[in-house]
Image (cartoon, rainbow, N blue to C red; front, side, top):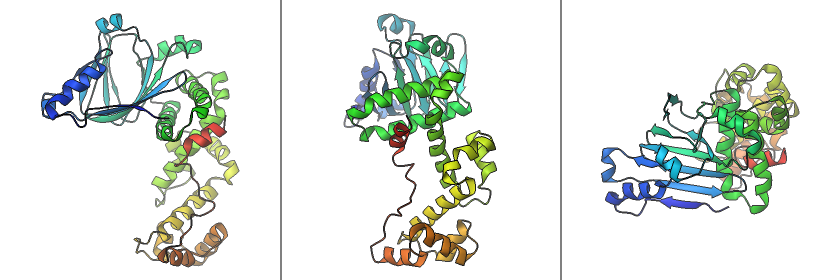
Length: 335
């Protein structure tokens, strides 16, 4: 899938701010800081898909206003689900909301609204009313709501992985992708027992992807275990163990990731730590047991993997988890 790219890169600095404003003038009035006259490097990538669109925007600080006049002139009334890396301030005629970083929020382009934010890279999911007519009243009721809930944060994770996967998509993937987006929006923004049941497989896949990232980020932490993971995911121990039942349970799953990380570090010729030091940092205090467990997992000893790396022949471990590389393939497989 090839995006449409809008960019101010390559323009003279004094023209960049005006050019960026012109690109969006039919939908928003954009106001940049005073120093924008010195340059306003910004880029937008937009994918028009079947029944929805997704945009990825990287731009300096600005204020975007959807005025009453623009709403009258431009009849676009899509909902927009936004996920930013920085805090956002949303201003409506009745209220001002402060949205934390990495937290999704929903607005409607059919009403006047303004947003202020610092320099940021943001994702926008555009949901047309025709494509989401069956949940229109609930989405309207949810506009202006900060999705700072377990399901909301999971939806943010889903949107991030969706954006990462777009360059590798083909037109044949789009129908399933559209169904996946509709299902996740319904379950996470306007949840009901039926919608949650319909999205159960996708929600579990998204949780498993997020779980893997949490484990990898905390791989050297002595506190890494069921308690930490329950808190980070916002799930009960029962739900966590059910999520990992096909992986052999929590401890086995963590051990598997630790072994994969140890394999990667042993395969890295720039890593000068000893095998014992690598094992100890990853929680393997018994060197002999680490060596036996490593061989069972990869069919070679730690020292053999290190020697192969030095000889330029290190191979990818056959059992390596690849959740971080192909999130969409697994998501679609769960449909």
